[in-house]
Amino acid sequence: MSAADVLIPQSQAANLVDPTAYADGRIHETYAWLRANNPFGKAQIDGVEPFWVTTKHADILEISRQNALFSNGEKSPTLVSQAVDARVRQMTGGSPHLLRTLIHMDQPDHMKYRVLTQAWFLPQNLRSLEDRIRKIARAAVDKMAAQGGECDFVSAVALHYPLHVIMEIMGVPEEDEARMLMLTQELFGAADPELGRKTADEPDDPAKIDMSVLTDFISYFTQFSEAKRANPTDDLGSLIANSKIDGEPISHFEAMSYYIIVATAGHDTTSSSTAGAIWGLAQNPGELAKLKADPSLIPGLVDESIRWITPVKTFMRTAMEDTEIGGRKLSKGDWLMLCYASGNRDEAVFDDPDAFRVDRSPNKHLAFGYGAHLCLGQHLAKMEMRILWEELIPRLKSLELAGVPAMSQAVFVNGPKKLPIRFEMA
Image (cartoon, rainbow, N blue to C red):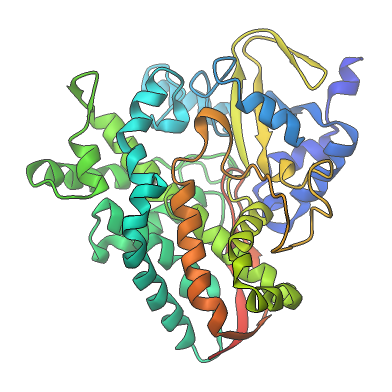
């Protein structure tokens, strides 16, 4: 096969790095084209290191299960431009990472840091939190009911419910939740003109990193960590602050990184999937009728909304040796983009993949990743959503869109940022 056959056409490759394509749905058109015509092709785009693009469910699984062969730590695990990569390496003395979270680590460090908090997110521990989470969910539903039959579901419910849950687990005071939400939106929505910080460092770079946002996070969590070391309590924040790795206290840099990943990914992706569920139900009243007739379908609603939205759109990996995947020969050092939102609409795995169906079974979505880097908080996210729908669905008489929904502009993590709805509640 010639090099030309491997290359993705510029018209399609451009969408892979364009945040607006993830907002207006063009990315799904590109994914569908790639799955049909070049499911493991190479993108060459000005200003970005060339990278392979994997869009099929099976290939994403194959790469994800081989963590030694496909590294998280060698290069950036998220898409960045060559200019941003060079700037980061200059700032860090050669490292491609401004943070060192679980998504930036390979073995053996990845498992050492993962086990620090893993017990908190296991189902047996989460069961002890269910009553408290249900109380938070009921308050969220009551707030929605008080909106008078019309609201923006994102700003009224979806943003705040999972935020309050994870902040309470971390031990962050409720009065600081608004600050955490703003910083999260500025971090993940840096390229979105409505969400990004107006003084962004690289205003014209779709793969920019706004250092001022990270600086604000670190400033907050430095004081937070000091307080949790001086007066530890029974929360996740205290656990991180007082953790040890190989018998030594966790470093300041890695503690800050841990706080930031939990304080952002711990609610933003759940917010997006929660809003996605209401979006899907508003467009498909028959699906809401199914849920009201059979509440046992609620776990199906949870998984389907996660699949349908797939908040984490992409992750990058680096080949550590020459190898072959999907019929393509890769060289050591090659960069790969795993397109989870494409794998979750792979026609070879999902019947009628663009449809929203609460009774979809099986539903082997990839939204939480796979292998060693399977999302640490997946059980908490699914539990939060299940509890919310157990409280809301029985009270929801009718639901429809009251305007045009909008998705955020972002290549890495995106989801609904506006969802106007009209509803009746008991």
